[in-house]
Image 1 (spheres, one colour):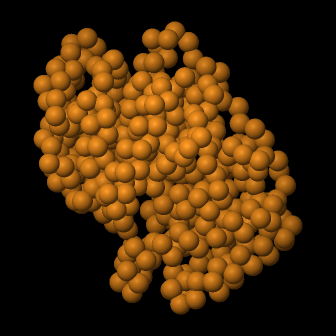
Image 2: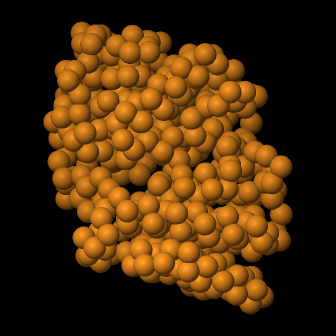
Length: 426
């Protein structure tokens, strides 16, 4: 039975969370897109994640999809509801973290508590300020994000701009250095003293997250954050249950058909991974897509097919990624939203074309890109396996045509991921 029900705002974040929860011994599965009539959680899944594409959607759509997902999870037995957002709090002044938190909290009692802190990937929160690899969020590469530039590290202020409800903070000095019982009591009191708003939690280490999970495990608040707090809750669940499930073994999809990397993210880490990739690559220019989308996609598909036919067995990279300066120029010419949509649609079309030719293993870089690709491929549910790197697991689609999919957030994974991840692919 599903113990933890998660509403995730993008596909890669959903897979990240499912991967880290699965690594604790709690079987996890991901449903892609809003639940439909007849959808059921996978048998034996202790954690069911609904992966939406709501991070940058219109606010009303994001709220409607999230509420539908939350209700479906609760109706199917989830004992706790969790709002998954990015570890870098990706959002704008309009949302969508705040409006979705308001709506989901109303399903569970009106209050939420959470933190984006995920120390395993360098995300920490102190005095309400978010740090990325030891630097303030506003000084990190996230300040140049093409859709959600993060220029303010003060999470209380950022979330406060997105919701009319009060936003409070549990600062580290109020619980740090105490025993588990005293720290948990301090956190619990602060959260329950604020029954109508949102409470953000400082956390510097996994031990801090474990303290928060001890404080919040048996409550009914909406919980929220990135994969760090979810993993701590899963560790608590396993500890109290006294045992963990066996590691998830993914079905083999076979070795025929070639391998393809689709990189739509413009993040610094994805650009490093593109630069480190030693195999054949195909770049699709957004300017070409804006001029004649069909022609540009057809040319890209032909180039990929030729590379796959070469016979050397190397994976092929297809990318629309740009450096920050060129990205700004492209957005000035074509608009931010249209530029993103052109790139996502192109990579989704390439994915469909190569799968039609027999490709069964793909790496996809970027949350919006992953959502577009899985939708184009008709993938509705994936089983989640072991992590290649923190937050980067392989998955296998559920259905008559099995696909091995590594769906990664733009900033995750080592520089050589596009070359090395295949060694452990299903």
